Length: 180
Ligand code: SF4
Ligand code: SF4
Image (cartoon, rainbow, N blue to C red; front, side, top):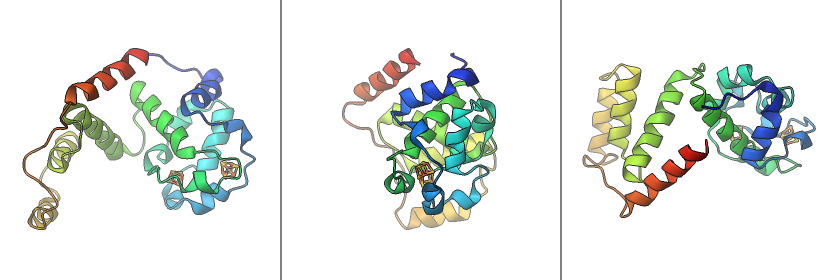
């Protein structure tokens, strides 16, 4: 496991996200357009500034990186074409790699459960995802009524399906792990 120092945070995030974070001139357009910014503890543009200052710990512990839904609204509004969703993705993976537990624990657990499901089958199976999420986060029967209703509406299939060549998916995960 590679622990990233605050000093090289900017270089690393820029390299992995492919975004020119230093081009941000703090105009706020991304924050105004973000559908979830009012729930974030740090606005998305401030995250970019904090990356420049190497404030890794505060960023990785923030709720913001997990609340970002990767909707890409900010990227389309940004006059400098900065795709913040890609930056957030790098930060999420960094938090996972370093075992940082942030404020949004349930979303973090869901992120892990989702990726585990994709690695196993190449596609998401809602029922397995919910089961894994509930087992890992507790409250197995908490939303049971809602679950039954969704099942009755045909939103879940009981049996998971796999993509045809799931070996290729596993290879991708293996390759990513080898370069981390
Ligand atoms: S819209 Fe772009 S330039 Fe403006 S604050 Fe957001 S990231 Fe920075
Ligand atoms: S990608 Fe994330 S930060 Fe950007 S607008 Fe969507 S939720 Fe907000």
